[in-house]
Length: 467
Image (cartoon, rainbow, N blue to C red; front, side):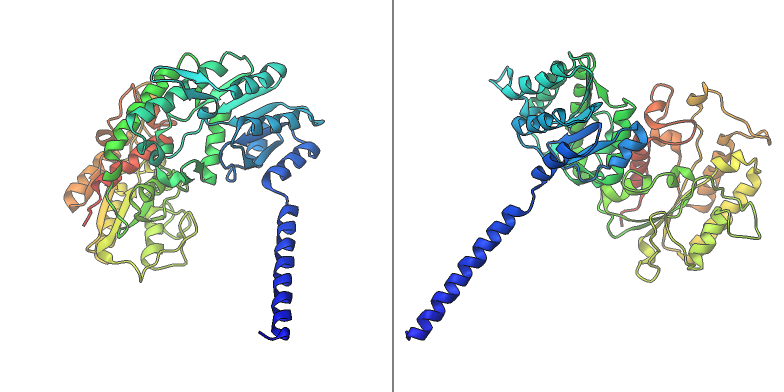
């Protein structure tokens, strides 16, 4: 090798070393999530903090401000050990801020460990955490126990599941002794962990669900304590064991396209915990939701398409209008196979509230279904009966100005389904609603809560033709 080539080789080697050192220095100069957190916690004003052993990227400080009136700092870094958690607590309590609430999502395995086949023992970090709770009695510590997706729970054998739930029980039992500590666990919210679409990863709920969970914390809906934890955890375990057997039995409907027309039963919520969202989450079906709250089947103003009735929405759909779903998507008319289409129709409760005659209601539904059948003769059409949760009203069914109750509108739907040979979903018989369980499904006399929407979606899935 010539002298010139040797010199060139050495120069290139030195340049590579300099670039490598520069990169290392640059990387060290970039603040990490943890260093940013600790700096912000030392300098910024706040009156509460939310820290977790899992990512909080989908939680919003605006949610805390809107629902709790707190200026909450949401930590970027996910702590992995109790010493990391206590370093955060040291920082916030050494700041100049007056702290109202500390929200901590914590993995109970960081606080307890298996000692032998029969015992669970506390880790040292449990005392470290409790020392802050006792030292700052005016601060509320709200401990949120993680509720990962069913994918996580289903992967545990029964021994590991039992051990995990023992960790949860010991954590709750220990922390509940402090008057300024509250514990939360969403194990009774089946809609949450049984729908994989609610999560960006096993432990990270999506942004819509994250906001809903914080609302549940604020309302104490998912609180758990010394007195009810054993029963709640046992109920949760039963659900997990049952789901381990049935989790993979949902059909793959990725070839299906489901179009929804209806009122607030289908259209009140958006995202993964809406009825269409659950169907998508469990089956991968393609969903297009044109349901709008407060709407009727009957066209209240035949001169316009502005009242968003079934007639109006169907006009827009069949005419391929510039027409968008609740999540701002447009139907891909030329890309969908007609034989793979499913239409889900739910109207009637608002027709009842608007005192519309059942004869007009029936005529409108028949006309709309006939138009769908003419345009998409191979499509499946599912029609749902309107339902009033009479148990919410003390077992008394309401009557409108025409002297009609909701069941009479439901009877119309049952008759249409039989006459026109379309698929019927009769709500009370499919959901088995009764006086003792109605609050599990409903928020009020007609609107489903999160669990109700989840189980209603499962009912719809069960009657969709798979072929």
